[in-house]
Length: 412
Image (tube, rainbow, N blue to C red; front, side, top):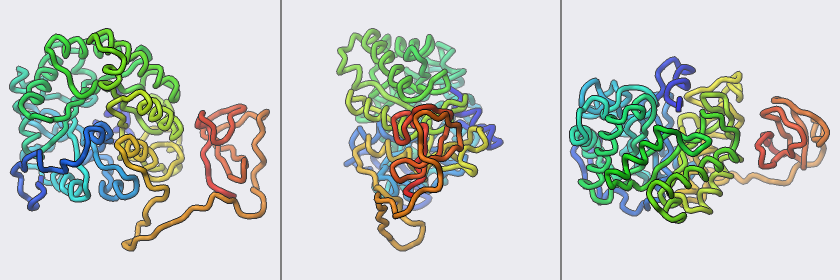
């Protein structure tokens, strides 16, 4: 999945993508058991991906206040060229203070983080450390540095095409699980219309052969010929069957170990996933009892200028019409929050804004929507007292419907 590379091209950099609680600059590890112990595993399954050092990272406490989100998946930790961990392969974890400060701010706001090893491109620890135990030791240093209660293994190209590297990564995940009681471990790999492909199936087979069961196996159903939520839920159905068949699990057990990792707005390959698509997949995840619902990325959960970003994918905005943090509200709901209906103001004072759903008197200037008219992106219509803008070609698709073809600009 190309979420780490082609998005970066738009930002002219490779897109992959501590202080502890006590004192700034203190890099000693606080016991994991005392860090926001009230967060449930569902919250770690709802951790939304963030690049902490690239792509204009947002202020995470601000995102938390605006959405109810409590957890974030910080990405990605790679090899520094040897068997030591570095953010993006360039910023040594051992000497880091920037990410540590970010983690401290999240924890001070009542949340927590997970850290993701891997991603698309770059050199992974499993490729250079030479064994599962050495890989685990390098990754354990990250857990200790940030006092982590959750980690993710994002197994993508080119690493997941090398069976030895996957043996080391899955073996390391098992060692970390054994050595850190209660550690939340997710395994993320490619999604296809068949659930996952040959190399994704090898990830499952390797875990089975080792007797390793993480909290979940997640697929990324984007950048592979997907179109909207229905194609994603179909892939999740297929992946569910693969989990049943590989591990001999019944349906409920398979769902309880299955996860979804989406991409908001325009994907690397030009697919589009709107707010309505996220809602549909969230409904699927909650109704079937999936254990993870996340997306790439919070850095992108903002509107571009212009909103469609001239038909290109960006690492810092979604390329669809939205309000800030629209997509993060779906992970917040999965985690157990009720997202605010309005965003906090950007001033230092606290203001409560009430949005009326009753349109003012008078009529909208745009023509009324017609079921017999063909619309293209940018066309505007009025419907039910609101102004709507088409974000794609559509015909007989009602504004506000499940297709997500229209963006609501509000009451006229």
